[in-house]
Image 1 (cartoon, helix red, strand yellow):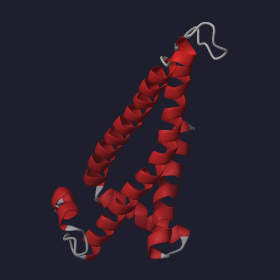
Image 2 (cartoon, helix red, strand yellow):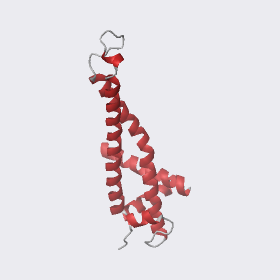
Image 3 (cartoon, helix red, strand yellow):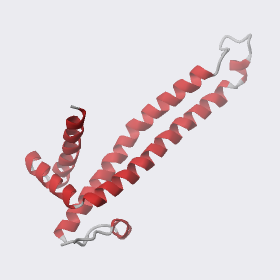
Image 4 (cartoon, rainbow, N blue to C red):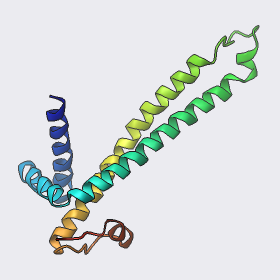
Length: 151
């Protein structure tokens, strides 16, 4: 069931992107999205792998930064003075919680970037389909990076 859920989520995400971009019905968008993705499978895979890697690095760096900030704050005098009401006997729990919360919040915010990446990729693929293999409206840098090669 895990695989079926992933396929349905992937289909829904790309179909809703095409519904928003083109204004077509859901069923038409599902068919169009699958056709675009199958015809441009190598580009979709390459962009997906690179995007997932960069997003993961971003999430990890935000989580680490939260942990470092929590560690720095827990070393301040109110938290290290045993006579203080806010004394921390161990810094582990605040740091671990900060890392976890930082990763969760980064995941939530990076979902917007994931949808933006998918939208640009689907728009680029649609542009290449309409232009018989050459992107007409894509920014030059995007067209150069994705360089669509039709067989």
